[in-house]
Length: 349
Image (cartoon, rainbow, N blue to C red):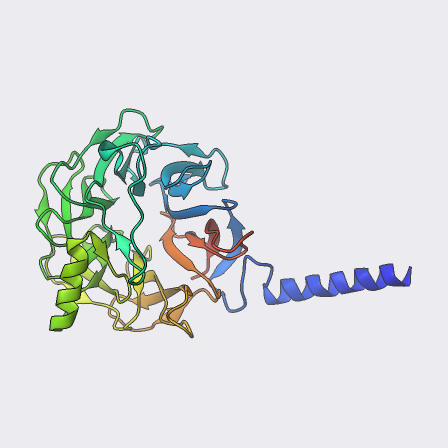
């Protein structure tokens, strides 16, 4: 009986500490902008979850059900009704709902073959594969009737859609470098927005559609330029030093927002358009480790604020259309090392 009472007392005490310190595996001490965090997926690799324009659904990429590489899925914002909406062939990435909710866009390699393209060689360091077999597709929201939108040689992916639903912004190597382009929702009227040597990618429109936020690395020294070109020749990029940039939607007035000297990526505007949330390893004690936090910064580059305080990975943040919720991917509360799941939280301004 004494042992039982002691056990209950310890459990209650531990629970009270968990609540008071928000250390229940979902919330971490210091995360004052996130409340009521909920885990929407359980196990495996799940990331890049983005809201539909009505805020009722999420579209995301996931490696599950014994598949060897990512496919695209949709689910309700409570995590229910998970459905695969890509072809189940090749590798997919970077999906987005169209404004009417009836169609989706995503990047896929399936026209080049049913199998997953080979993983990159990490023996020379961590790299991202820029598969030239990636093209952008549009399909019905249930995944039926996929149609190819991009047909140029090279990598076409990282597509997102303007608030008015009329434009797609994406990343492509069609002109020999990794640059940002826009096209009409039907794939016509392609326009190149960036021209500086280096990687410009991961673009998202501002809430009013007048600006685009993106990540970029522009090599400066001869050694950096040579290394970048060598990696690109082999369809690779080293994601070690990205900064956040903003430009007008027509490609004018490009300006660097962060100067952190870190790997900063996945930027997204706050609903009022005044700030940008993004993921970065700037706060990591050891940048070589996979410790990425969410951060907030004003569009003029001031007011850098750390949002998450998780010792592993937090990334791919996106606000709901009404600005009340934030969805993100994280290694927190992982059942096994390496699991990345999708989480949703109430946003505190």
